Length: 43
Image (tube, rainbow, N blue to C red; front, top):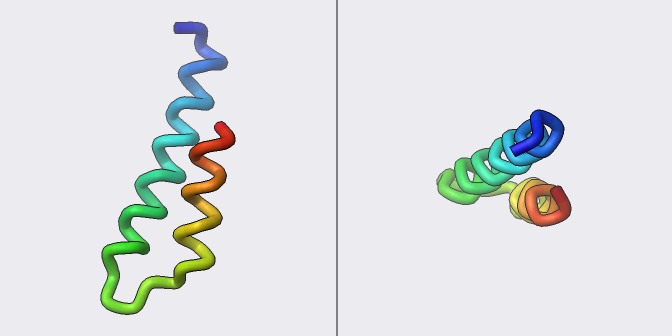
């Protein structure tokens, strides 16, 4: 994998982690979950 591609994959995985963690909280901020999930999908 090209280094640039790997960088984008890592960024997408970070967005997915944030979305997942926020979604698992007792009182999730759904706008943040949706935002990071959408960012992950775009990347």
